Image (tube, rainbow, N blue to C red):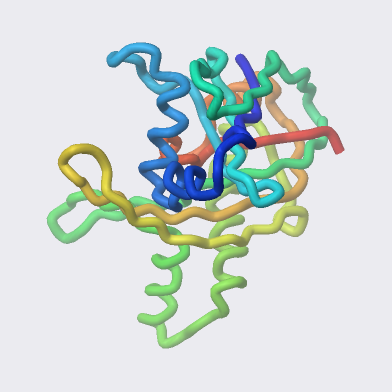
Length: 222
């Protein structure tokens, strides 16, 4: 596996940068995909995260192959990625995820719901309310906790911060299919419980919407 830091080239004008990124989730998806799609049938074998670093678009990727850069529009630094993990090891982490829950309607059809808005609706039905920041922390922590054991790690809720709630809507592909998803940012400290499972989590990600910049967990030693 490879860990890469990918930046748009500094030779590009701000206008060109805006035209390429322009805040569209599908446009960002296509930008990164073009660096890995070496043939039309290629399946996605990478995770990515988009950030703005020093006011410049930056992408972090974990992939089975190095990104293929054929123009000078990109600056890429890649290195082999094979973390040495052990049970009980403590790591700081950052994760952008698409936390959802599934519910069935009266016709037994399953639907996916944003955990934050689902909790907000539930409270409203009960005649209650809560600050969005508190709801985000609680529901995000619960969502991650429900997945931690099978992903090979554990954490204390007081040792993580959940914020950055955003709703995203964009149109995908030739059919202009609308895509709606929400994201949360997780930052904190975890403990590795099952090294092999956790390594798979680092390679394969957590939660849905991985093709749209979600699921990549970046870690470092505490």
